[in-house]
Length: 242
Image (cartoon, rainbow, N blue to C red; front, side):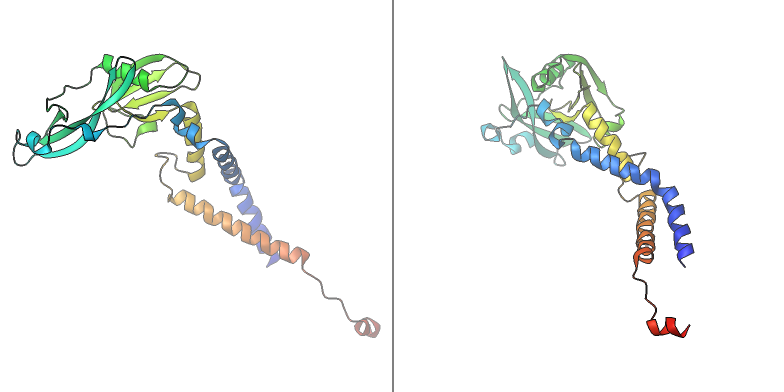
């Protein structure tokens, strides 16, 4: 029995040694990196929308559309001299089309152009770099794969490779991605063993390796017990009879 346990333990160790090392390494790195720095919260400005300033009711806006129209409350960032603020907006979906109206005066608002989106991105940026590039993208990279396209991708020339992803309708930053975040994401991928989407925590690969690691631990405990268990002392009478 001990021979089988020892062989099983050794083979499991050979199979698992690299992944167990990656689990420890990735866990250490993720624990070391400050989560607020990973999220890039220190690089962006959050703007609140004052909906109590709305002067137009939703019914007034809906009266301009069909009976099947639906309405939602959102906002739009805008720059006033050196300050950045936002105003409330109604978003109406009617017959497959989307319309946006200012809740302040009821006027329909136009899409945000590249010059304006670049200015809004620069105002929301709190880092030490400058804006390098603004691109409207429909095919999203892996680092923002959970968002809906299109998005404005804004790149800054700082030391951390910062990118802002802005909503083309609101002008607000949806995600901040930096080299720190990319390192954390890579370690997360190694940790959960999802090398494609980096989001599936229940992958068969992870479950199989975790079960094998548990078996490796149990066999090690059994071998440790047999190695250090107290040995019975033979009776003095038994020795004398021999």
